[in-house]
Length: 104
Image 1 (cartoon, rainbow, N blue to C red):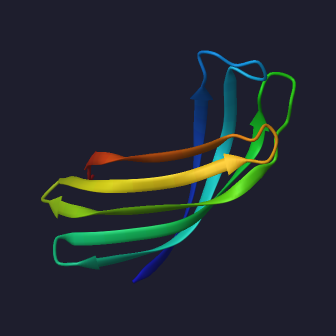
Image 2: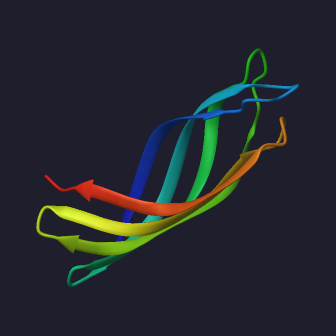
């Protein structure tokens, strides 16, 4: 088991909206990971910061993400779940999907 910290940049887009069309922000995560053989599991608590939606500066809500998969030599493949959002505008998002990576 190992702890980790992550910082990323994200942009959410809306095609039709009265309040905002683009939301740009940095997202931070603090979590723990576990590796057993070729398998791995990561879970983290997330919090967006330094967000900008047009002229507004929304405050972030705490979120959660999890990722599970296997490593095959220099590649990894897995499934992920991510939930996050903001106080104002009241934007929430849930993502699920497949993640593929290259390990170097």
